[in-house]
Length: 469
Image (cartoon, rainbow, N blue to C red; front, top):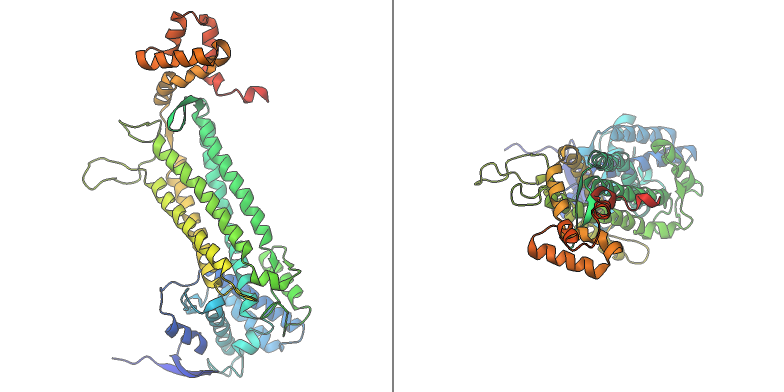
């Protein structure tokens, strides 16, 4: 067996062997040994957010003459390489790690330091006298202000992809709303017959529901642009230049093309997880509505011979290992499972938010991981759900009309003509005799045929609110 080549690095706790070709260092290696928990790693968006902070800090510290030009330029170049996707495989600390994210933070610092040493030339990885992960890469910073800022940036970076996915699903529902606008069907409340609606109205409502969640999502994004960077260890700004936080926020704005502001109270911005709880809450609320919509689609497409079958979902795969030709609503099923996971993540984030003590919330690594997991699985599932389900939904107009014509709830339209009690009697007789409402009303001479035709105009019944605009 060939023994892996190693190098020796030293920290305040002593010496430790590290893989020779690793860009991470001794503090990362301790975390690897201490926390072999899940095998899960931090999401790339979080890495990008953290590295953006490191680059902005190096630019700022160089401008303030707190870092010499050679070291600062080496850090900046190493950051650019990581922002381009290099060395992400060197971020090896488990999600479940030391509180606050110190292990992950040092993992990034060590990668940038060791790559910076190579860029500067004349040294080997681990020679931190040339470029230190603590004294140089981390100058003016602390895990305690970097990590909550990086979570903010992580979500903002992801939003560039997530918002269009939500908008595409919204648009797909609205398009179906227009396509199905002329199809009248029975409404249903309590899973019982109700007055008519148009199939297009149902799908338009789904689209508008998504729009309300997009608005809420964008609103929370604005809160994330208020940064606690520069608070250092406990929010007092110790070891950070007075101009540092403002200059870093400006540099981050240039890099991400966003407008950032510095929190008035850095201590509050560092301690409170409320912006992340709010974002998770938006995702949870959207998930709740998505589950309801998925349930609707499954009900409306149920059958095809023994269910409602007013719509047909695209067939994606065989649905049974034993029943030939069975096709199941797999896309709504998949999205529902994703939504349940998002709800569970939201609960975890809520617990983590209240678990901080005094000047620090130590549960930030799980907050970062779970909120990014929710964003990732929602983004992917909504994209697939839109493409492989919603865009291909077709309507069974005959089936819709069949149920609309036979709904006992049509009698509701007669309330203003014959009164509630007489209408109720007509409905009961229709159900017991299997005669139509129209037939009973005419037999009992409760209305003229012309009056009845006008009152039971199904399409007009679905447009009552439109007629008052």
